[in-house]
Image (cartoon, rainbow, N blue to C red):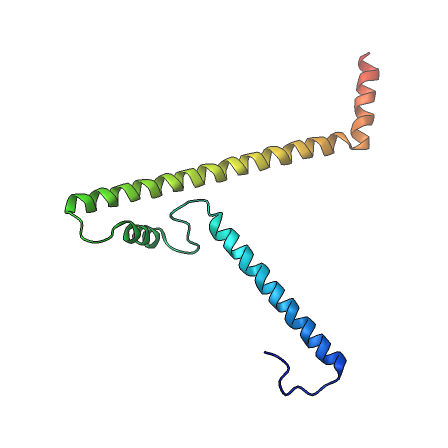
Length: 133
């Protein structure tokens, strides 16, 4: 971009130069983060945001099937991809349900801990212990 034709004070020129350096640095960090995200992919073949299952399956099938294939190979690859996709869906649902269950357990334990910290609960327990003993 540069300062060609810019009329301003020396301070303005320094500010523009500083902002350009900041933009370049931000762009470099963004590119680095993008490369890391791509290289650290979790290996899931069907990871596409917002795509329907049939679209995702078709795209994976296109990537797997290159050139001429026999009918048997075609059917086998199609079946394999379908099974793999269904297995990933089951695993994703299982993980989501486990996470939900863990969150519920954590909330319950927090509520129990919070309830036991209430001052009137402690008073009631002391009265029951005193009356019982």
